[in-house]
Length: 181
Image (cartoon, rainbow, N blue to C red; front, side):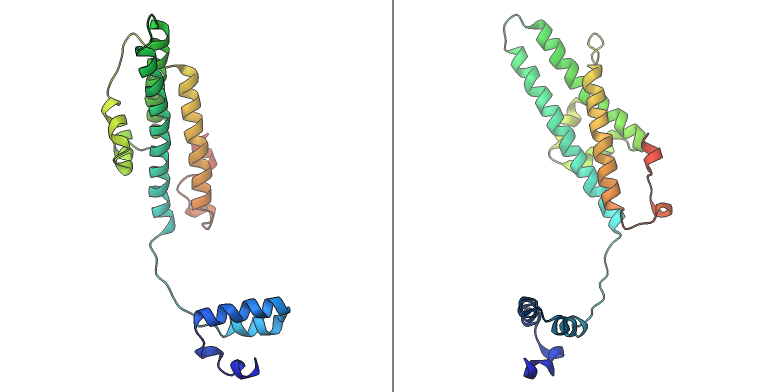
């Protein structure tokens, strides 16, 4: 090790890594400190993490909404092919409308138009977007499902925004807990 000590600045990243592992195994904290302190420093430029975080959250939310929608659509399709199941069809269709309604309500809360948000999840969002404008006057959204969808999206949004903006102080954050209450 003594011969390597004089050449810490010339070793490769992999060699430095192996030496740190070796020093850790020997519990040689002095050697570890030397290896870390002589490690070359570099500066990196990156795009704003919060900005890209919102795009990631948006995509994830759209995928979640699509999963809710496809599950409801699957129930609806099964009900349609079941004989004398008008009640099941009505309930399943009410769930489909509830997914749309809960998503719209969520988008309104965060100040984003649903169709614009859906552009971030192509091609998954195509089927959902086709149904967004469909309204049925005699079947109302299932209120329980709509509340579940809305609450689930808000909970997910809160946790992801908190995670994505954890490095920012509270004055830099776009959304606060109070915004989503």
